[in-house]
Image (cartoon, rainbow, N blue to C red; front, side):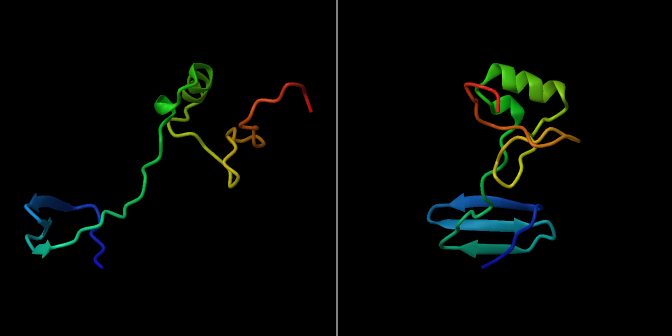
Length: 88
């Protein structure tokens, strides 16, 4: 297992993967698993025009979410991320 960091170049050569580090060091792997994880979606990626517009107007290029994944209004209490048919 190898931690690569941000500064490397990846090149697939047939069944091998070649990693060239910023210092010129080269490593070859028969099996390379990219385990960086999924990058965060931006507000631009949301399919809901009103929500997307509101987030972008409030400077949330990447939506703030709490531990339960509900949206968080900066400086205020968490806002529900589901719609409710009546006020609580």
